[in-house]
Image 1 (cartoon, rainbow, N blue to C red):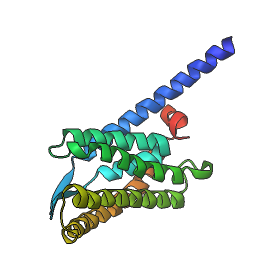
Image 2: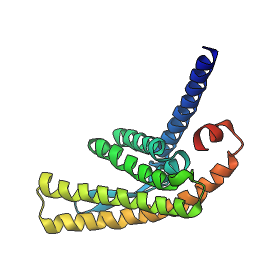
Image 3: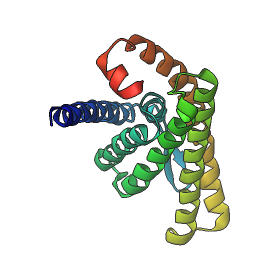
Amino acid sequence: MIISMSGEKTKKRFDLYIIVAVGLLAALVFAASFLRILIPTPLGNTALHLGNVLCLLSGLLLGGLNGGLAAGFGSFFFDLVYPGYAESAPYTLVFKFCLALVCGLIAYAGGRRGEKAGFNILGAIAGSLTYVVLYLGKSFLFDIWFARTEVATAWADVTAKGIVSIANAVIACVVAVPLAFVIRKAVSHTAIYKRVMK
C-alpha cells in the first residue's frame, strides 16, 4: 500500500512538471507570435514572425506530443486574440501541433531525447516543412473552394505566402536548434530537466 501511494505521488508530481513546462512554452509561443511584420498578398496578408522559433523549440525541448501541445495551444490562443485571425485558429492549432510533433518525434527518436545536433536539425527542417505544406495546402484550397478565386490568383497568393513561410522556416531552424542546446545546458541540473527533458 505504501509503495502504491508513493508511486502515485511521484506520477502526479511528474505530470505537474509536464503541465507547467507545456504551459510555459505555450505562453512563450503566444508572446513570440506578436513579434511580426505583416506582408500583403493578393488575397490577404501573411507575416514574418518569431512564433515558429518557439514552436520548434517546444518540440526540441519537450518532445513530440508535449511540444506539439505547447506549440498548438500557444498559436491557437494567439489567433483567437489577434484581429482577423480568429477564423483560422482551429487550423493553426492542428498545423502548429504537427510542426512541433514532427520535430520532437525526430529529435527524440531512438532515445536521443533531443541531445543529438544532427537529429535536432533534421527534426527542425522536417517539422518546418510539414507546417509549410499544411499551411499552403489549406490556403490554396480555401482560395479555390471558399473564396471562389481564379486558379491563377490562388497560385499568386500561395506563392507569396510560400516565400514568406520558407523564410519563417529558415529563421526558425537557424534560431531554435542552437537555442535549444543553450537552454538544455542551462537547465541540465534542474528538476524540470530531469523530470521533463531527460
